[in-house]
Image (cartoon, rainbow, N blue to C red; front, side):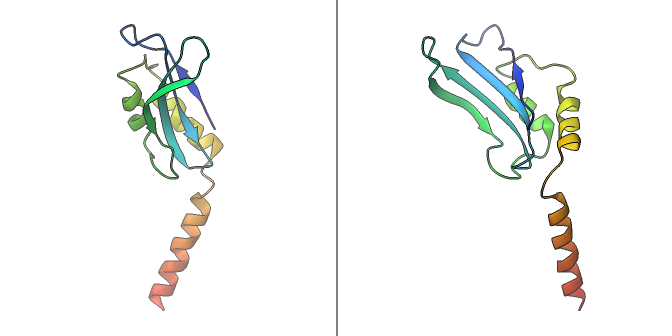
Length: 109
């Protein structure tokens, strides 16, 4: 799993935090933006929570765009996220491909 912390934009409240990354176990890119209490660090509310379900987001641009209203986006973030997916892999990729091949073979019979 990769995690990139994002620096908030100047107009966004100081209590706002944001991350994006690739979750190989869920096979999805994700982004989360939330606000925390200033003193104890407790969650106040989620502003964005995407990529929390398996296979939800397969385009790194989608999670970057969701974070863009709240955070500075490094120029190479898309490329880093795509590289993370290649490096960390997708644990379902082989199984899904195998299932499709078996399904096609059964349909031909």
